[in-house]
Image 1 (cartoon, rainbow, N blue to C red):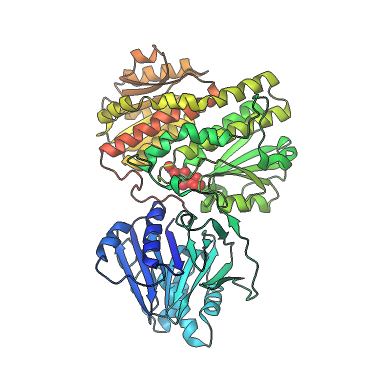
Image 2 (cartoon, rainbow, N blue to C red; image 1 turned 90 degrees about the vertical axis):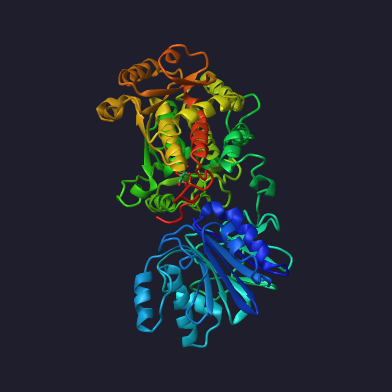
Length: 612
Ligand code: F6R
């Protein structure tokens, strides 16, 4: 949510910042801005994409070796040039870019208005810039002291990069709740909301912790906290991310690339975690906590959006195989409803970004109440893996498309491995069945490859559906979460209204919507509910709905009932979500492209939601 890039060193700051902002644009893209300090302050901002900003300033001065930029996902104030970051204080002393929300901004603003400060924008960030200036002009403080003092008055979440016009050789950066990474080069430093814009220049990074304040000059970096001026030793890490993973690799969109990457990303997810003879699963991150998981009274899965859908698949997996009751919770609901959590509960947080604010808050509540909290995350070093007791990375590689695809299948792969291993530990699965299940998982990548082969036919179906205004997605059992995920994918990138339902629930209300205009996508591969879902398809057919069915290769029964049939290879029921979601991802992608949507950056969305 919002992308931040800062640079101090010996190269042209503009080039580095603008390039970095383009790489971070998936985090927010309603406006962008940049500040360069080159004896004086240059501040440029523009509504729209980073490329609009670039175009608007192409003939303006862009010198200097210190600068910062921001690409925004609006929280306070509509997207326009004025509300775009960076924000400058009234007398131009401080310039700030900010990711997050300053919750007490209204109180702070009131105080500043009484001190004759005026405001150009509607943002909480401008309030903070003026607060800095107010304190700075009051007393004999350095910029760093001013920042620490002002932050002690701020309530909320932030990743901040701050420049002071009087101290042109410094960048000050601070974190609470919104991630910031500092890249360390030779006589140069980079700051960004994630490591993506940094890895081209250096792999040595410091992930700031909550309450950290870093003061960066060309000669070095000093790490302190908001409360203490005592320097602390930074923890320097090597980041495992390659620049090659950050381009579209010849595809038109990141989303399409990421859909097609799934045979590889799933293999990466289980690589090294399955013994070569398929006799066992080994999840290194859970070694020490298995005894507690094996004896869990209950598993609570917390997540948001697509990750929540993966969590629902997890519920079916854990209950079927490990025979432990599971609850799946939205992070946003869990955190505010005073949930009952027992010390022998195991809470699993699922998140691609590892930064989702609601999921993080849920983790903190569960930890405070004594539960073992595990994370399933994709972004290495992000907040959730750092705050959980233990966990497993999905290793799907960077997901840049805003609509999550390969992260979902990787999350389900991890949940599958966890559920099988837990079942084996608890003796709720026979060893023969355990081995066969593992073997079946290892051949899923080949089957996904085959499912991707329906690409052309899915384009044909998309052409027929692209002008619909509504649609219903149905599934049963393991395929119900897939129906929810298919509907979410369609609505978020094509803006067609889509509802996912358990197929049998349709008759309790949604069936009223079905007429000859209504596309009904039914996920109906051969499994234990097959006959039941065939009956549900009959019910749709009787009301003249347009039936698009995802079926197992060779299915003839549904072929005779549905207008469009998309085949996927046969697999075991517990693996069917990983396979049957593939055509739904492609369907939403092509419909969105045909409708002219910006698939990688759909309206109003951002890749990582670091505000509640
Ligand atoms: C949908 C999508 C979102 C995310 C949700 C949680 O395609 O991407 O629904 O799944 O915002 O994000 P993470 O997984 O990063 O916690």
